[in-house]
Length: 314
Image 1 (tube, helix red, strand yellow):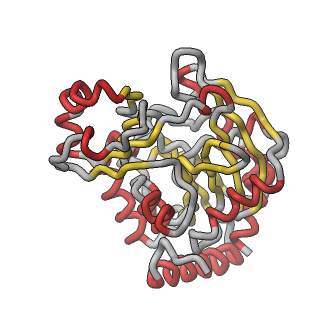
Image 2 (spheres, rainbow, N blue to C red):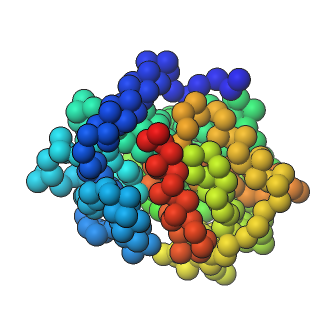
């Protein structure tokens, strides 16, 4: 049995909240908030299409901006994280809001305990210690005085530098080994105030791309391959990344699924991102907070998502 990334007390709290959901649903229609941000007040278009699917099952559904002070959170029965894409820009406010929702006892999907763990990418260090094949990574804590030249392996010719608390390639940069001094100067303030990850850059990202495996309630739904445009290393669509639906081998699906066994609760959704090198999945991230789930690329994926939510309420 994999060691838990969430402690026993948090698991008991999750179980209690799920029992509350069951009892309340027996008596009245449930109010569901789908969480988004100020930049996308009505949700991303692909996520907007979830609303009528939930409504067809007699849920009162509303898109909610997570930091909208006008929202009376106590009126909602449960919340689903979807497009909270500015959380890393408002770190202090987001952390306080998570605590507020936790204190109110509103069940969230994924759970607050999972979100609090997943929002900081040092969870990869724990997964690595449990035997998960993580893309070679150095975990740089803030205010570390040691120089990059002293901690980067000699065989790394290029590396990707990114904050541990971030999304969408925020403050992410591809660095050549010869540019250590330049990056240390450019990121001096950031290194003093933020934890960072430094990952070995693998050229496979240009050739085979990054692969995302999407799971609902621990069951594989679909997979998407993402490749950057020429002269870039970032696969996000805002940087021109090209996405395509793929059918990975059963073995690769099982490799991605095995990573999720290190999370003790059943996750409404999970996106396992990595690079496939010689038929082995090298993990880059496990996205449990606000990942794009590529609904538009996979026919029936929205319905599978809604059904997974219904299963969680049974």
